[in-house]
Amino acid sequence: MALSLDDITAARRRIAGAVAVTPCPESIPLSEISGCRIFTKLDNFQRTGSFKERGAANALALLRETGRCRGAIAASAGNHALGLAYHGRRLGIPVTVVMPRTAPLIKSATCERLGARVLLQGESFAEAQEQALSLVDAEGLTYVHGFDDPAIIAGQGTFGLECLEQVPDCDAIVLPVGGGGLAAGVSLAVKSLRPEVRVYGVEADHAAAFSAALRAGRPVDVPPRPTLADGLAVSRVGALAFSIAAPRLDGVVTVDEDTLALAILRLIELEKTVVEGAAAAPLAALLADRLPELRGRTVVLALCGGNIDPAILSRVIDKGLVADGRLGRFTAVISDRPGGLAALAAEIAAAGAGIKDIFHDRAFSGPDVSAVNAVCTVETHHAAHFAELLGRLRQRGFQVRPANPPPP
Image 1: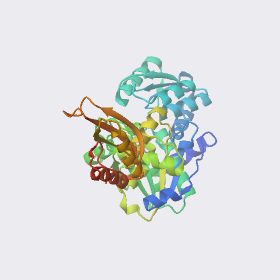
Image 2: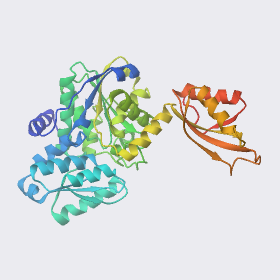
Image 3: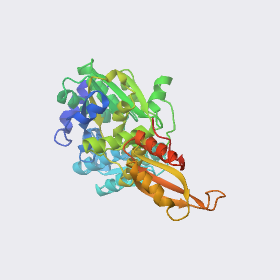
């Protein structure tokens, strides 16, 4: 089915008042660290925390009366399910969502709170989708695909319309790419109205299905590996989404897990904004200098989801601090006699570092029973500071072995 700008503008009228027009403020701190003039499109401010509401509201509004009575079903890692659950309740449409067992707990629990029937099936999106499709015929439900449905893509395209209106002088929009629905809708809207505006996609390198499709010239199966960007972890991009987005995107790049964690940390520290891994991908691409052609340009980053599991967030912050060189671990050989640990602690303090954690390892410290391994986790200002600390300890005669080499 061919989609056009008219479908997107119609979707905008259809969902007006039900889906928020989210802010898109300029970010001075992100501009300073990226070398671009950065605006952040905050779709993490949607009622259910992501852009997925746009497509879900549009698709449900278009259901015929029979479909509305029997209900809708979808497979989703979380955000599409949340959008359907919320707008299904608003419209009085029963919603069933099938999630992989690995879906974040916060998303499954919220779907249930919003009134959806939640089924946890399979270990991947593909397995969850197979189970959802089996219920379509068994229960007479309408399947609403999370990223490869015309109504979904048209709804996501409203994101692009807002970007152009809120930042009329923007040179580029950078989006996360999973199944391709957002990239398809936004690129169609933007290139229809302002073809000179560049649109880029960013994938997690553990889930690079769109890049694989570009190389093959068609969607292909690429089983994703575990990634912080769980919302992007699909094994195959949508055929319709790919046919729309592939000729319109100006480029697609990948980012690694450390950079995703660092981007989440930067957004918390500099923007006081919590996002999930998928939404951090656009900033991660700039931090990793994956889009050097955007230096000095006016760029909109799609911060399009904020549903990160709190239990995971704390680990992501620590991972980001390690990637930033502000959290390090090393093993030092010290005397097991009184004063050995105090001498090490004094040197760490003198170097201006802080001890976050320390423990003794006697069982594996070697044949010298008078020596012990002290495994230290320390807080430092930056990677160079951690390297300076290790150098200082070696100068003072300590045998030191870092657990994590200082970042470059």
